[in-house]
Amino acid sequence: MDFTAYFRSIMEQDPRPIVICSPEHEILYMNPAAISGENEKNAGILGKSLFNCHSRRSQEKLKEIVAWFQESTAHNEVYIQHKEKENEDLYMVALRDESGGLIGYYERHERRNRESGKLYDM
Image (cartoon, rainbow, N blue to C red; front, side, top):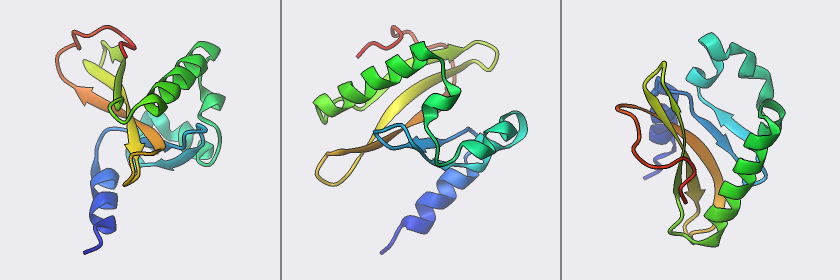
């Protein structure tokens, strides 16, 4: 059974932004939440480098995270930020193929109590 339609539906209906990038930081997919409302300006960045909308410090952190993801198939998630206003934690999550190879990553938003871990604790 092909689950593509199910996975797409999950992403399209998620109220939190989902942005999927290649290991080279190219933006491959953005769900409606990532390009609507406050994020409407993001509509034009699909297919471009994620670095176009991040500071130099963030770019360096993204490079470090992808290198860490590539070191081991056990390296799959990094806590990166807490947004106080939204009471939301953000994580970078590895995307892997059947053999465990890194095929990309995405940012996961989780609204809950503040993360107790350290930022970028790999």
